[in-house]
Length: 435
Image 1 (cartoon, helix red, strand yellow):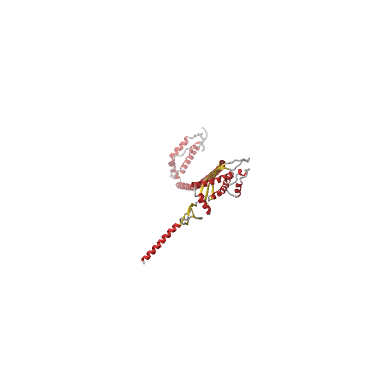
Image 2 (cartoon, rainbow, N blue to C red; image 1 turned 90 degrees about the vertical axis):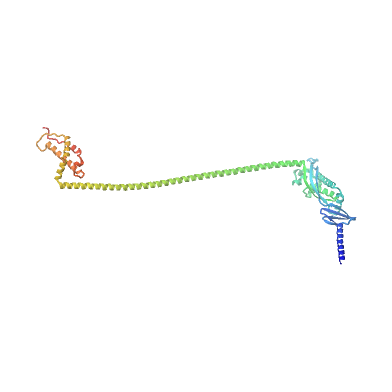
């Protein structure tokens, strides 16, 4: 049992190994970007990677060519088909820089042709072949177009020189223009190269015109740049002028607002000062009124107090005077009553007390008087008249001293000697005349 299992396992392993060897030998991997050409006699099989290709060894011939696109940069310098106003040829030297992309054709015939005619060469020869094909097509296109036509599609519109050209453009250029293509140069180059590229098994994918250079274009570019710069300078100057004007207007507005604000501040300050002055005046008037009211009230109070004091003093003075008068009247009354009661005895006593003083006063009065006695026997003689006068004077002095005394009853002794008035007032009594 066990030897048979080992045998079966060995057979299976051998089959698997043989199968892998057969698959590896007959199946070949084609990577991406590669094209495998397998031919068995006249039968041609083309495999585009990535895929698996069935290859029978010995009887199948294989070849691998690249399927990637080929990029070729070209630079073409030639003359245009321009004419002057008189119809004479006036070509312009133009340099065109372009980039073309080509690849292997799609059908089997083009792939076989590319493998036999193009990829059979070296890489340098392949690049030289593509460059020659594209350059020759580009030169023919430049010779068919005018200078302005080369720049119309790139500048976005027809130029005045192209619009006023007297000689019409070439028929091929007119046909391309009628087709509505944007870049006539690229269209002409593409149409011219397509036939030549098909002869070597390649297809034209795209053409990118990188730059078209000429002295005329450069001069126009400089002129346009100068004009644009001048316009930009004018615009910049205008913008700077407008900005300066706007700045000055803003500064003027700011100055006006500041002046208005200062005037408003001054007006408010004046109003505040005026209000403060009015307030101070009102306060001063109020204080004056208060002081006046206080002074008036004080004056009135002082006047009332003075009146009250004066009335009180007057009442007190009147009461004192009345009291003194009443006391003096009472003293006089008492004296008079005492005189009435004492009678002649009191008078005699008073005469005796006052005799020395009276004698002195009578002597003084008589010394100042002049008596002239002319004699006479009747009672109206000068002597009798003088004696009567002296007696009246004495009585008068006595009564005056008694009345004006201080109530002590001393008369002359209390009040002192009588003044000389009464004695001086005694007039001389004329006598009866000289004897």
